[in-house]
Image 1 (cartoon, one colour):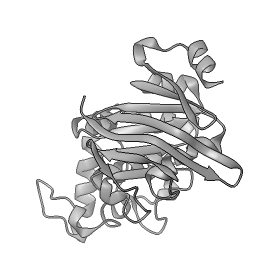
Image 2 (spheres, helix red, strand yellow):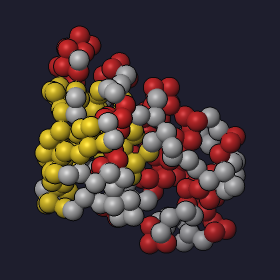
Image 3 (cartoon, helix red, strand yellow):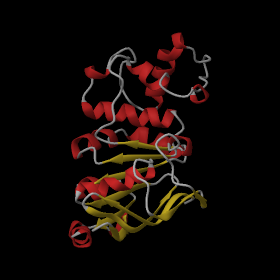
Image 4 (cartoon, one colour):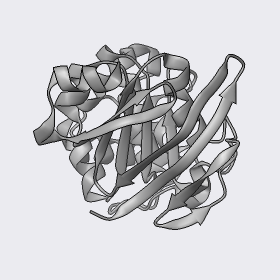
Length: 241
């Protein structure tokens, strides 16, 4: 499995003290990686460092085994890292097709097999993409016509349409995480594109069911890692607590 991303020796502080303490982990192509731990402020710091919302005091970021400067918020997506958190939202005044196809750099508007994408054709493109990802939705509907779990699914699709290589689903909540990850064709589409996902959460069963590998997180450090065939709830609890 080709390495996409690695964080090594990451340390940063928050207002209450140390959030991350020499934290390290790797992410491989096509992998769904779980990061399991609490409390939420420390757990969420991982995704915020990756997407420039927090600048670490120490440590190194590697992308495709090459050292990179930690991104700021503006450049995170240029490094193909997309962060979806409880604060992430679609634009309520735009329909689904406009949300997926228009609010992106023009260089990332894709070419459809049927038509070059112009504003009048985005609903056709959206329909094609929904079908390809196995997601049933109306391109003309507005975000408030869908559940929060469906909206998170659309945000993942939007990230992938924008060329995401790493999608971080950060503490969005077990019901919503479940709703996104139930779309098996969407996950398979991500794997075929050699992208990867990081699921940051505190729900053991959900991560056990979804992830190829799980890191446990305790007091700002990674306390262990297990592959799918090694999982047990009791062992993960012991590593986490």
